[in-house]
Length: 151
Image 1 (cartoon, rainbow, N blue to C red):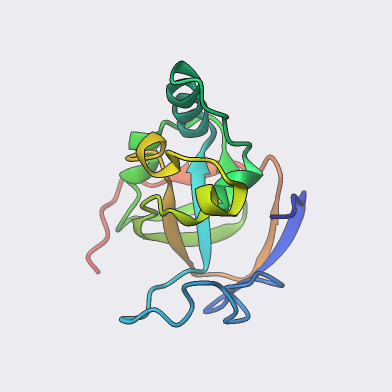
Image 2 (image 1 turned 90 degrees about the vertical axis):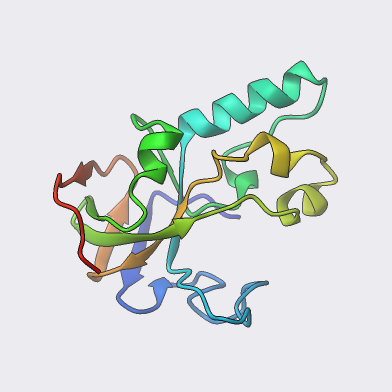
């Protein structure tokens, strides 16, 4: 994945230029279809997974190697996971958490590294639906309302 400091997001599609927004992602044809507008992971989740891997003398993963679109600071993996079913703001963009981003075998296979699935279990982040178009930038603040969604 390519690291960017600013991206355009579009309601109903995802990140402009992303493989899933263009229908070219590895799992784009999955049935039943899933909303794959954006994937978000907590930086602390990556750090914890890497500690687990390094304790087993295995190579760690960089932020980009997790294949998630956004890496968030200041939130734990469990706090991020709790956003599934919730509406929240990242910068000026409104999002709704749709599901946990369960670790799959693909990142490890692509890099020739093992144990991605075990290391990132419960720390793989979430997928979210983009509810408003606009620009996301590095450093955008996360705002979580305390109201539960009824959808």
